[in-house]
Image (cartoon, rainbow, N blue to C red; front, side):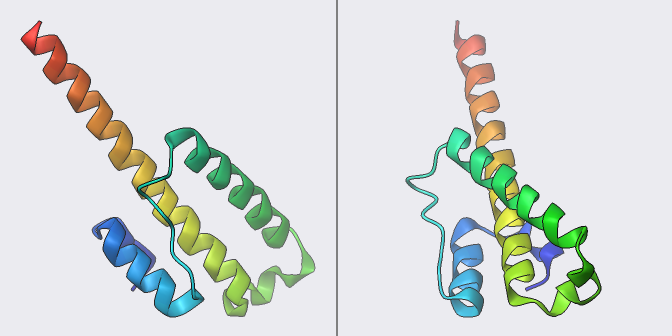
Length: 97
């Protein structure tokens, strides 16, 4: 799976990919938007450290770096989808009122 494919994938497909490549999955059912944003922020900090280190030129061969990118992308997609659902719900409620 390419990173660009993650945006088109369901949470189940993303977890299947992460389980096969990295040996873990994300429990999206128990995840909150606040927790997902915190995790994403922490991942961004770790990616920043790698990108600004001497190891940056070989980062794409580092499994940890690739794992961080995959998790960040899946969290970003989940946050986007969740916010869109909440916004659509609020619009629907406003229309009813």
